[in-house]
Length: 134
Ligand SMILES: Cc1cc2nc3c(=O)[nH]c(=O)nc-3n(C[C@H](O)[C@H](O)[C@H](O)COP(=O)(O)OP(=O)(O)OC[C@H]3O[C@@H](n4cnc5c(N)ncnc54)[C@H](O)[C@@H]3O)c2cc1C
Image 1 (cartoon, rainbow, N blue to C red):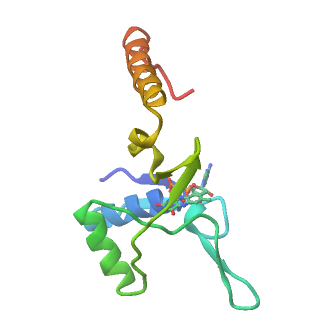
Image 2: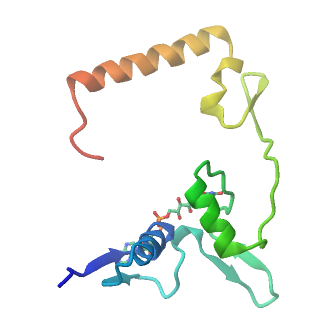
């Protein structure tokens, strides 16, 4: 007999895992969730005035066909598309979001520091491979 899979947490990851198991034809699983609702940090709540409050944001920026197709299938046209344009004001200038992709807009010496720091971190990691998340 198939072993039972226990999925801990009904956030997007847990719900996604369960969905995928079903899709693969494996139904011997169970999700356990400590809260009385599903969705984890992506949950939303409706207040008595009818307003919906999101715990976390609901912005999606996937580049994965499987995920995009799934969103289409599950949400139909119940979502809005916006071109995101955000900026970070730092060092007397605006840097486009996401910041880490746009450090080239910073002063040259700061860009140099960032790149050197990255190389240093990579080298340190080679000598001391990370053993755990902590
Ligand atoms: C303020 C904020 C804004 C965000 N904005 C965005 C955004 O715009 N776009 C985006 O893609 N992401 C956004 N995120 C991130 C997104 O919410 C998370 O990446 C996503 O919810 C992670 O899903 P998860 O299933 O891994 O974890 P979680 O959502 O944390 O779900 C984990 C679940 O496990 C349950 N659980 C934990 N421990 C146990 C246990 N011992 N037993 C049983 N159940 C347990 C929890 O109750 C929870 O329901 C945002 C997050 C925050 C906080």
